[in-house]
Length: 341
Ligand code: SD4
Image 1 (cartoon, rainbow, N blue to C red):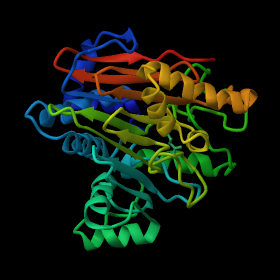
Image 2 (tube, protein in one colour; image 1 turned 135 degrees about the horizontal axis):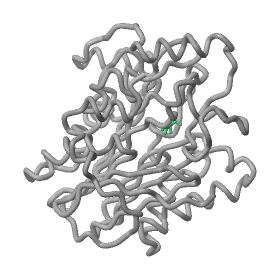
Image 3 (cartoon, rainbow, N blue to C red; image 1 turned 180 degrees about the vertical axis):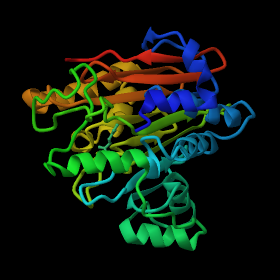
Image 4 (cartoon, rainbow, N blue to C red; image 1 turned 90 degrees about the vertical axis):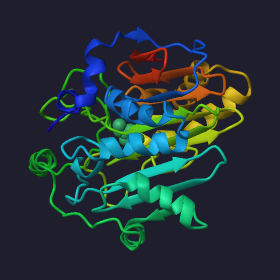
């Protein structure tokens, strides 16, 4: 599989990452407009794509869609049709998008469509609904001109699935980067695939444009080898993504079930409304997950990132290893997240 590091080597837009200075993320005031912040180090290339729009006075909505489309195009990457399949060997994709007027759209469990984020935008703009799922989402996509792609898995997806089939053990896996590869220590372990690739590939990004308007998008193939039909946090407004143009925007990555249980990104935005900085708000959401079941929290990862209307950003995770990518006219770099456990 082209894991995220290999993916970056293959991306012409990854160059800034190679020289990017790592620093510990904090919610300092960047005074930035425009600004785009995204999950993981694969976000560097995604931000570069979004930046083309933001720096030309484009809208945050167009920018986050372009960023998500960019990574969905990487067929051997982790997000999109190149991702790992569910336990029936089918790649199902989850995505959502939300703008500064609280318009939002999402697709869940969509198959054979290359750009679920653009379908989500069509749901937002062309229907009175918010979420379309499964076959209905696919039908809507095709009716709106999205080509039906092949059922074939990517090379990396096929290899991983064949490996998984040897045991066919139902253990949804999620990343915790500070555990040694292949270590198993809980219901959601191991957190690495046999080739050492961490299972954290959701792309979530939030942006503020030159007008100060906020938008966000998420796209993912979700948890590898999940039950067919399982939907994670990523397409759920208020879980994987939330935008409130008066306050800020947030997105998440990690074990979606835990994020859904606390309406994670909605909670982060509400904490910011109460006056917490983006980093403090993300930390408090992580604490909410840990408080519910501290023993289980040791076995899983969730990371949140957020921006507010002042152009401040921040992030926090349950475990070590979460990183975010930040782009403004003052910076273009990775930030390592602080963590609870
Ligand atoms: C999910 N939150 O499907 C996603 C998985 C993820 O990095 O973020 N992976 O639960």
